[in-house]
Length: 115
Length: 115
Image 1 (spheres, rainbow over the protein chains, first blue to last red):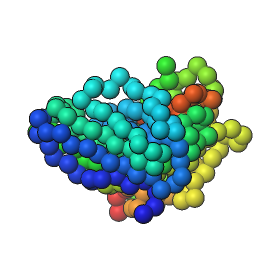
Image 2: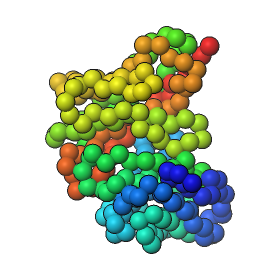
Image 3: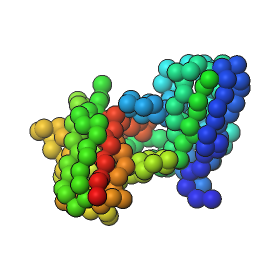
Image 4: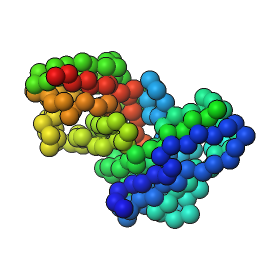
């Protein structure tokens, strides 16, 4: 595997389910990000982790719970979601989170549908 | 707060014709500017970036963008498009030397190349 991978690619869940999204980067980076991409809206940064520490939480509802056990893996735990949470969730990584010289590399995303 | 405006949600163009995708930003500090491309069912890929130096930057597949500070613009151009250029293009801006590598994205422009 190369680059940034995300599983599953598609997920359909009910509002009472609990599921997790997984992201793995094979680039040796130290920073990882979760973004939400909804139709006709700009990409929304949700969380940032740098060296496994959360450095940014962009006022995300608590029904989204991130976890970063190491610099290569990032999870997004989902519970009691709402239909408006349906979107494409993108993971990205960069060398580190400080400084704008660090290019962010994106995974293919998980298409989430909440029924 | 920084923001990015992509006025055109969709740009239809015939193959081999020139195209310009517009991007304007607002920022009170020095900025770094990026264009990302998203092909169907894929994540975002960096197309080109302006960090400093020459205001004209080029990608390997024939796109170019010019940073215009006075007009706060970073328009993307290609003199002759191909069918394979059909994708969504996102303009993004990041803080200069910020503590977190936050990218602020526009809403995207769908480039639809027709034969």
